[in-house]
Image (tube, rainbow, N blue to C red; front, side, top):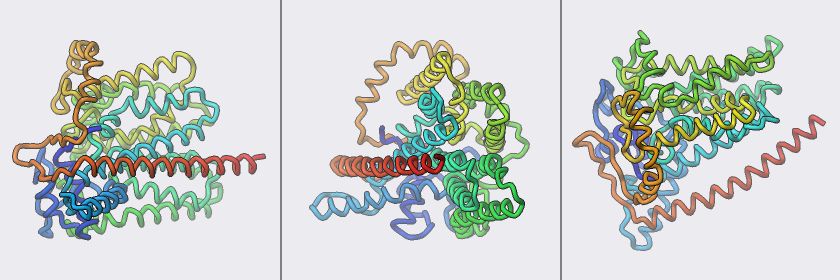
Length: 467
């Protein structure tokens, strides 16, 4: 993993965490000055002044909330180093703060993978390709770049929160209660805090689970619990918008950011400029599986997956920058990973294993191309640049590309920004970053141990109740 930092997105997400933890407010004036936020670009209002006189923030607060324990850890470690006479900053404008955000994203993606794996096992308890389906879903989409190269984005946290929605739905699809509906509302609400478009994934439990509430009174109670808990969790974002923009509901990127003509719908799917299908051909296999492997038992799940994909497609077709700016692939579809894993898990047999590994490998090669500069994250490479002669010419260079990545100093801050927007992030000693990493590994191993015991206990109780 490397210290990549892309303006304005990285600055927007970091500003939420730094302002809430250090200043206790949502005034991002000092954060934007230090983090290099631009005021506008690609027709999008980023840090421009709002009607209330405060600088706006078009990015959701949920990612920063998920980073918050690691930001607090970084602050504590910085004070310890300062106490021992080291020259470190404690104001939050340091590489230690950025690295804490990276640790948060890595934790999110690890938890997300565990939840996706558990959801797939609940869906296909005797599936022979479950783990391979999970690996393919994670690596055959653009997610790897936003884990190892740009973890200061929201895509790891987004995948994690959507995975929680999918897991809770699949784990309880035969045990639907009002309490489960409330927990699902909490999960959907928090997913919306991370990326507002994640609210579309409310369709998944509504389609899969709510048909299990046989009596009308229970259905009304479940829907009420789901809606109320979702609203309560999403309420902090509404309050923040009210403080920033003077309105509860807002398009924070500006009124011209969305175009509901959906004229870009075909390009979002088929363009070689970050279109979904050309950059992640695994979705074609998933579509074939949804259409060909639907049974009466799986019809509701297939309908939920298809509905969520349709909603995501429409949501990603309305922004003026449908290509998502500087990007590796169709990054706004990264939160489809849990549903993609459910779909790919039904593909079994020898040819399925070969196909899944091949799809996984193709996207890893493209990730390496972007990571080493062979393929630009901006502009349209065309079919030749994406999968033609330039792709084939890169294959013999794979060992060299991997070696170059491993040789890159992991403590170096690599900034991707417009001219004049360089951030003023103070470099912390590598010893501080290393200590943060060691503490993270220790905590993670502890959580893994406790989690495995809880899962084992839960499986035993489930087995006894069924017996």
